[in-house]
Image (cartoon, rainbow, N blue to C red; front, side, top):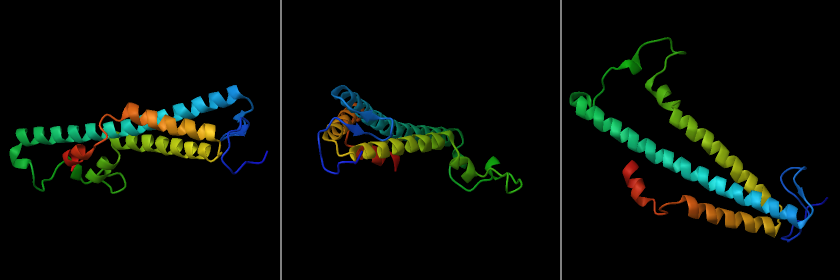
Length: 162
């Protein structure tokens, strides 16, 4: 089956995988629904990553404020701590290494990978040039943005974190 490289409204389509084929109106409707839901999932993951970032910044600021209240003389300086305990270089967990492999960064990395996978899958669905699927993706992105974006003006949050 040759791919039609022009925009079309056909019902017969091979989508992403050789086993995901449509041959009827109901098959196309189910494929459109799946594409629509994938878009909503994409926007949900993107919004959840933003929520985690804001939550992490607030948690760090709270920890920093508590540390400066309980120990004001050590609030800023170059002090020796347990981060600089001398161990063999290959097994030493320095401050940088501990900050690199936090649960927050690992979760953000995994969520970003899933978000990128969904973005590429949606792009490949659009590249079928089927207008039914393209419209379902555009509407799904719009609905997902509407559902998961509380305040589209993020300027106020940027000043909080920087």
